Length: 90
Image (cartoon, rainbow, N blue to C red; front, side):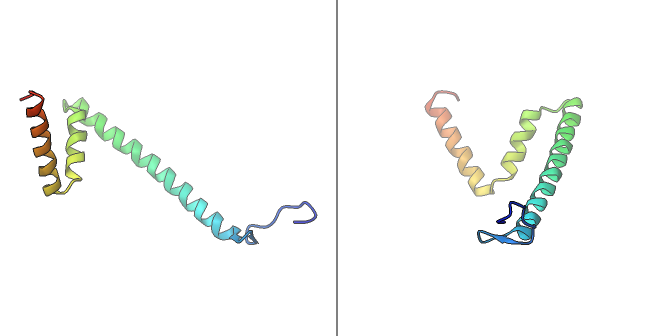
C-alpha cells in the first residue's frame, strides 16, 4: 500500500489472492502436522515389532515390496537373481 501499511489478506496483490493463499498455507501446515503425528505412530509400531523380535529391515522391505505390482515385483526379482548369478553370489 502506498502509505506503508500492510494489506489485508483478502486483497489481490500481484495477481495472488491473499485469502486463498492463506487457506492453502493453513491446509498444508495442518496436513504437515498430521503427517508428523502419523510418522510418530508408524515409528511406534516398528518399535513394538522390534521389541517382539521381528527384524525391522525385513519388515520395511516387505512393505516396500507390497507397494509394487506383482508382475513388476517378479520382474525385479528375476533381474536381481540374474545379476546375483552374474556376480557369483548364488
